[in-house]
Amino acid sequence: EAGVAQSPRYKIIEKRQSVAFWCNPISGHATLYWYQQILGQGPKLLIQFQNNGVVDDSQLPKDRFSAERLKGVDSTLKIQPAKLEDSAVYLCASSPRAVNTGELFFGEGSRLTVL
Amino acid sequence: DQQVKQNSPSLSVQEGRISILNCDYTNSMFDYFLWYKKYPAEGPTFLISISSIKDKNEDGRFTVFLNKSAKHLSLHIVPSQPGDSAVYFCAASARGDMRFGAGTRLTVKP
Image 1 (tube, helix red, strand yellow):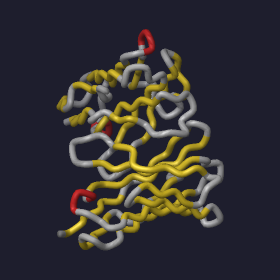
Image 2: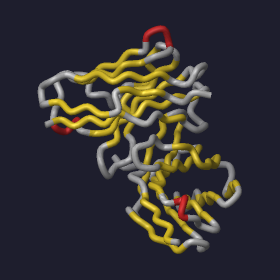
Image 3: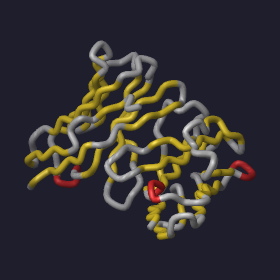
Image 4: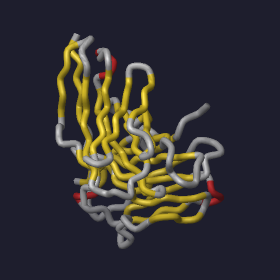
């Protein structure tokens, strides 16, 4: 079974530039998450999708971050314009269950460095 | 707001001995608790979980204990192996809202 795929693995940009990350969840997984993990901290939820609808985006900085999940499969996370504090690993995860009482399946992450 | 706390950033253990990783939480609404393991340059992978209606769950060398009155859970690894060296994240979920601790880096020395 293929895992959660993310790209790019690494991205370096200057502040005020834009960046986009892509995620392909495990086939058949209805729920998709984007997490931000800053160095030395645990993953922090940015947004949760159930199929192509948003379940929770309360911690997403909507003035600069946006995410979509077209057709309920792949998802993209965009940051525009980027700030220095956005430097982090962006983790995509999926789950077959609507209510998360089970484990999440994470991708390898996309490491963003903002200079 | 740190609802899930792992107060030990690192732990070093000799191979064959027991590793005990601790986690505290503040939100009494959490009803499911999980441990994830993370190797460098990889995403976290699920290790073991426990429902709030239980106080212990065991899977091979890994056992998770939950003390609801103390809002504390722990992960025991017995015996510890060098391949267990990784960062371990504690996570807690309340109706689908999952929060993670900052992680504990476990080093198992041969």
